[in-house]
Image (cartoon, rainbow, N blue to C red; front, top):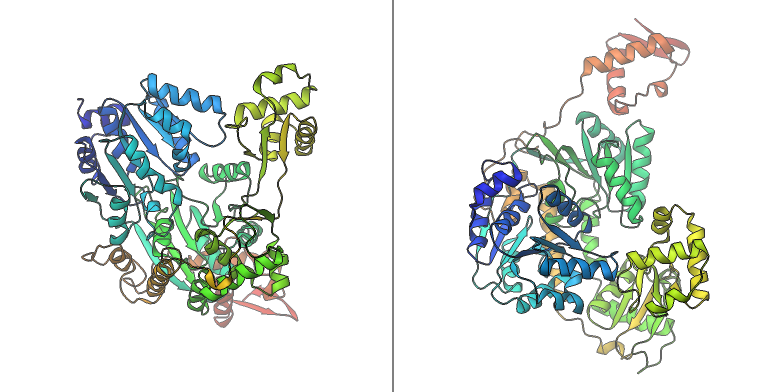
Length: 630
């Protein structure tokens, strides 16, 4: 077997391993189930790519991010390494070809999303593959105690039964001691085996700032003090758009990102930011995972996140190049109350959840004992107005009822356009379609998986972009294909729907299991109390976070705001501000404070320096006379 170090040098150009990379590689290389805990930017991909190349067979990589899969496959192929990925958007034929190549084509890496694991086709092909080991990225998603639990990850344990004796390498950058233990149990580790690297980021400077003016002004000042690429996190989709527009108006290039954008919009904006065409990305937590940009100098949270894991991971996207970077959390006098309110909004009282169930049944006119398998459109806004519910609480009550198994609740984001063929593949040759219609049909046949046997989700905007057609033209062709009974086309509706998975029962018979309600509410409460503690602690910020992740012996970082008594951000050169003011006075002869506005200097700083210059009689300014240097 080729040595791990020679593979590292040959394919990746490094002369030595970093941190615990070698420990993880040797462990999985010896066939041991292994959990690797490494901070963001710690070089996780090396830990499975090197041992996979050293062994016979194929490494199955389970990852939740299509963009990351595609990126890693591209990089591996550029190095002459055979790799492929199976993801949503591929045609059935393309999936079959990719999987067959993994059986016969000597491929070294197969990337799949966890949702793919339950597919009968995938499982049938997997049984015939020679798999060296399984890699589970973002492994914390398998733990119900984790902050980002995803039910699809529980399928991984079933896959292990199809591949007896094949070891598992689980990787994550955020896990508490309880989650570390649960990951190994959920994945069926034959023996507990953790390789741990300190989560400490010595180049990352943490600080917490109370908002003195407005979030916009504080943000503007931070972006001036810390030059370079930045990410600004906010909880609201509306805020992403408004903040980005406000920054652009101040002369700072910015764009926004959230889950409601089309895939094309997401890709275009992420690429513009990654290439440095846009300086600031204003985003919800939908942005960041899998983003490989090493020179981010500043991460700002304008809303306090509700879990230390989320904050640690998002803040950790700064300074991955090892150079100094800043993570700043903004808060105001209402932040703590807002955090506590999130607990009650996310997990409203059980009696309230039962009441929502009862009201939904009345709203949809569902009789007692009826409802099994029935799907109805459900307008949440209309429902809340009719029964006087607050939308956020009602939404979360529906989510809890869905997790408890009483309904399936799909909101408008999930209710995308869908298509399914109504004819057999052989019949297509007998149709004589207009060129435009045939063009759209051929595109669907190439890109939609399983379209002859099940509905496939589509986005008309993406089809239009790919075919260089107007979106309304694509929609017209889809409607006509449906009218001709060639396919079934269900246009996207912005009204959600509810499917009843059980017959309607009495309100008092609703049961929310602890795993759905009490336990998870307790976990959220603990996380929120921890993040409140982070806001209020007088101790080292880095040490506080590391202790949460089990590093009880961590030392003070010596450069966070508490360690430095808050003087952690670069200062604005006051001499430069004074010179700008003097030049402006000479050239513009302003008559009011309101006329002093510079895109690259916060108004608060300009105002403070103006007052100082007037007190020192360096300039004169009054409404009745022109400003002039004294």
